[in-house]
Amino acid sequence: MPTVFAHALVPVAVGLGLGRRRIPARLLITGAVAAMLPDADVVAFKFGIAYADALGHRGASHSLVFALLLGALSACFHRPLRARAWTAFLFVACSVLSHPLLDMLTNGGLGVGLLWPWSEQRFFAPWQVIEVSPFAHRFFSARGVEVLWSEARWIGVPALLLMAVLAAPRILWERRQSR
Ligand SMILES: [Zn+2]
Image 1 (cartoon, rainbow, N blue to C red):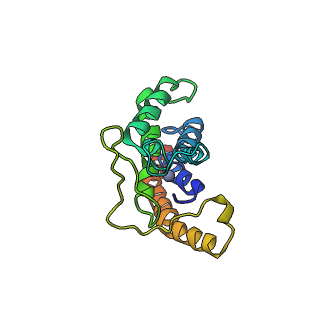
Image 2 (cartoon, rainbow, N blue to C red):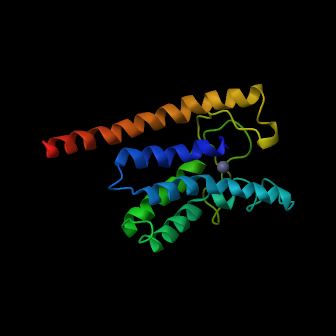
């Protein structure tokens, strides 16, 4: 995994880029939390479930089905999230899906179980450019700094660019309207 907070950067950048009228604050926060959620599967280690198991780390919780389920759940709660059902569904499902897609770009561990429950195959991207994050207890080390630098380059910078690309036309449009 990239560091868990790096995963939250993606929905935050997209949400801020699209603006509060399209992605209200509550939905933005839900998306950010949802993007970190797949890594809650590390508790599997505590229960003695192997990494490579379907319920192990980067397994079922890193699947397309899991992303769609969380999207559907958010659509059910679209009113308290102050968004339309479709917006809640798309934003949360894409936020969750961004997690395994980023994990696929890391250079360590096992791949992600994107097609669970149909296949237990673990997938990696052809380009594994992100330094894999060590688990928490080894994090504060030279290796930790290396991981953060790698995430800043491969997640932080693209997220900022994406936010700018999404925000620029909206801000220009709003300025024109208010003139
Ligand atoms: Zn992960």
